[in-house]
Image (tube, rainbow, N blue to C red; front, side, top):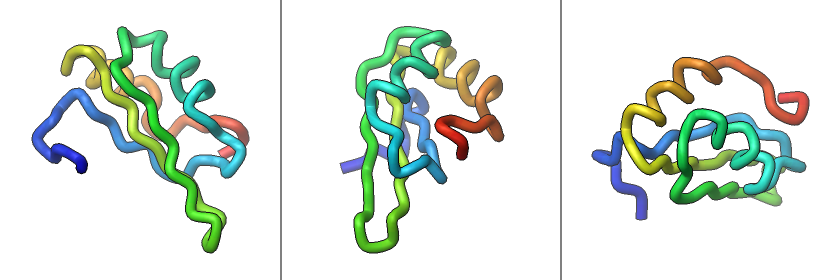
Length: 75
């Protein structure tokens, strides 16, 4: 279940189907301590998205500002 009120959790859309949790952690950990990184893959539509949860809201905001619109694994 997703807590829509958790400002520490970021949605990461449009991921490459090859992107995994480790790749998300490597990119996002530069902005602070991560509690959780998850990738969800839909094999029928071959789409992928993820969620990254930080220890605190400020780090999540910093990551969102820095990485919004950036590519990861070619997407």
